[in-house]
Length: 165
Image (cartoon, rainbow, N blue to C red; front, side):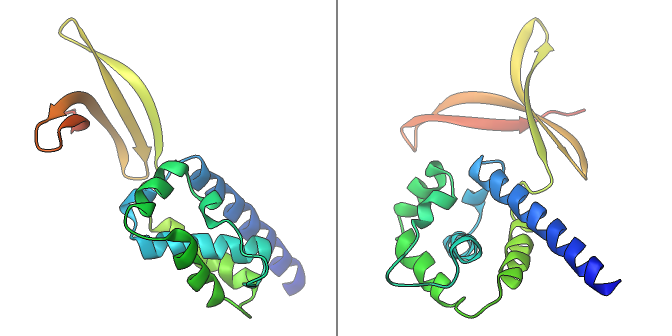
């Protein structure tokens, strides 16, 4: 009984890991809201799960585990390859199942986890507005999307305003 349960939990954990890893790759989670150390740790955990213990002879390309847009922002202030390699080297000897559990715990704390995003349009006083619809465990939120020029930044920015409903 115990063996079949542990195998079942192991399979479930692996499927959950694959799902959340694909969410990260597709940009469904707000990784930009996470600290750079957290992003490096996530990359190291994925490398450990998929490639095993850290080895100087075969260092994975850690940037392949996150969307390019996140990597570009990260690269402005830090070196992901170096930071993730340091985190990966700390995982030597750690069982893969423990790395999966840590990965799941970290991802569950990232902004956007458990929220599904839909894009739509809302008709309001003869005008059609673009909206983002967030569906999560805390309900449904609809945000109007406005594009405007920010004088401080000197560029166009997107602003989201919560609709009163």
